[in-house]
Length: 361
Picture 1: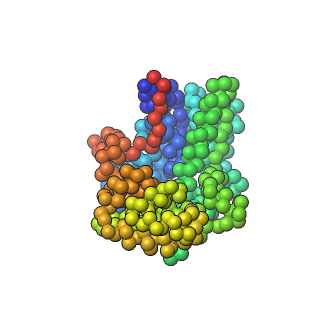
Picture 2: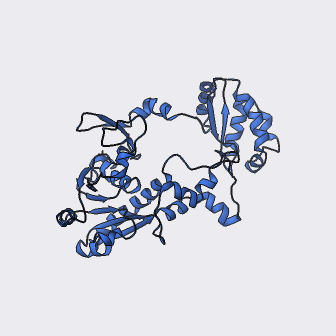
Picture 3: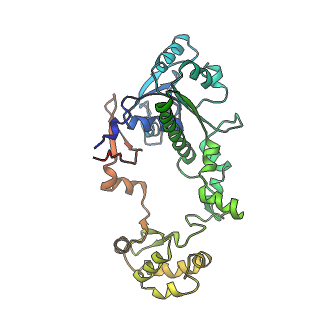
């Protein structure tokens, strides 16, 4: 069996990136065994070191946010305006495989770190660049991008109005796209021995990730209203129902077969032959009436009773867990790694590598 933590053990990655998207790419390679050197400025380092919640110690030089994307990296503090520090960066790049950057517009020129110049000097280097926009020097922050690219307009309810998601979703999406680009660059270099420059910007990454919501508009000029957790094309999908023990269960029924099975379990067999609910299109049109009928049944039994039945009959459903619930689950506990810090404090993180590599043996 291939040990995925050694997969990139011969790879050297230099990370000139801060906050979330670029560092997330760096940690992807760190988790797979690469030697990742994170370069931080000498004036406080990565800004996220100070992004602390009220429960964190002010004495600690790293926040929980920082730990989320900076595990298993070496940190090198440099000032690019200092001649010796700039020379040290070039020394590190001389045998590096990958460089990750997220410079503000013009900073690559100011620091003499333009990608075209670096490729000329280090022809086998793969450079991954993250920018905010393809055609603007505007400062990019995830919340702003969620607003500008339609994500907020899709999230929320008529009562709440548009809402941003409580994680930096656009940063994460852009990071995944840059990872893919860098992996393609590594494949290309193995064939040609040539480096490459991969460019990703947050705006385009967000728009490309609108997926079916974009397709709804592009094909039919249909713009989904704010529906909370509901799905514009499927029902009951995203609906939540309260149980006897005041838990919430979310349904994600995606086919007529699943709906028929659901009706049987709920002892509502007449529902699946009712013309208002006999097809997915009809259920989407009449979801409010359907949900009221289903809701009363859920309240008659405990959440564990319903979940056992749903799991037995392959009906897509899940308890609405809090973050505390998630990390109290035994399965989730196995995914936590404790990183010992020099100050003796242990900091928890969650593995961001969700796949397993099997060499076929």
